[in-house]
Image (tube, helix red, strand yellow):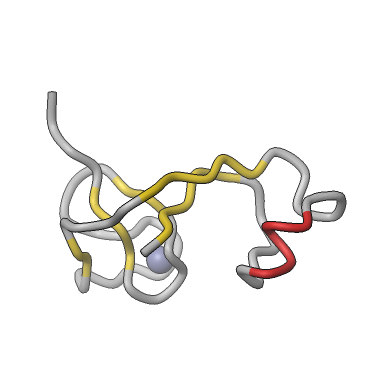
Length: 60
Ligand SMILES: [Zn+2]
């Protein structure tokens, strides 16, 4: 199993070497937790993390 990496810009968890959203290759391999945002409008965590799209994000 390949570990997912966290995009430094948007904190999204990505597979591979590039964030599909930011098109950046600045990814970090170490992150502590994972948040799955299904509905960013209703999610308090998404608001705290300033996340505006559904997806899988990492916590540091
Ligand atoms: Zn990104």
